[in-house]
Image (tube, rainbow, N blue to C red; front, side):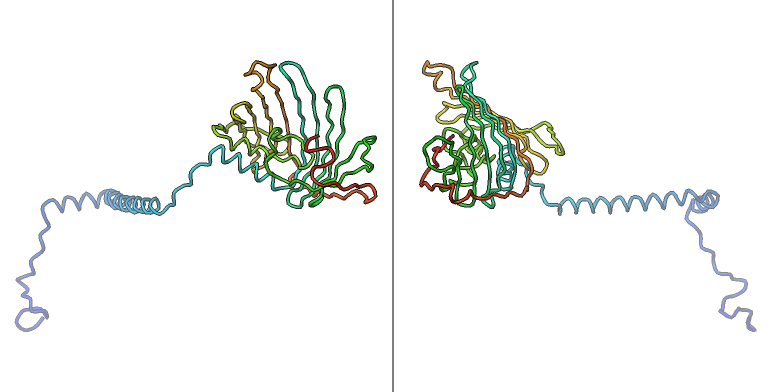
Length: 303
């Protein structure tokens, strides 16, 4: 304090600085908050939650705009076609059972088996056919560009084996057999592609199937071939790796029934595939047991 009765800041002792006046209701509110500090915390937390929700919503909106569109679902036809191609490109073993009937009368049966490696042009197959009371055994070997066909004894061919050019390791069967056993090309699931390319073919997928060590999806299909004279229906099992495991078909040559002849010729085939990636080793017969022919094998195109 100096000699004038003022403090060091020049403010008169009798004239204290005016006290700020709080707005109406502030004091009461401050009193409530001091007695109940949780009220104030609740308001602060509510504000934080509101801001956080707004930020989260904005982030979700940005992610939704940035997320790429999901690819369209693969159609059953495309999925089945892809499975046929994938299986045909790998090595595999197979077993094939065929029955042929006219109406209720059984005409014959075939049982074939073998191993095939399309990528290396290797394969071995054998067939036992029973038709009209006669049993025929056929054996073939695919070794690169050559096909070796076992010739039955007593045929007059002169050698046990016929050597001729192989037609190919994959692709659709020639018209007339579709996916059966032929002498100049191996049994392949891709032979069914000729059916799936037919006009008006229908393919449906659905249902779970399983086998030893695998699970998969069932596909069914139906088509008409050769101007509608033949109908083909079937069921295919495809495992989770995209390999065909089983292929069952029923082919009916209905043209005969349309023109008043006996009931249609019905062929039922049941093919199973396994051992994908199995090593296939094929050796050509000894040269002294082989006779070379050009064109079709000795047995002709089909056994």
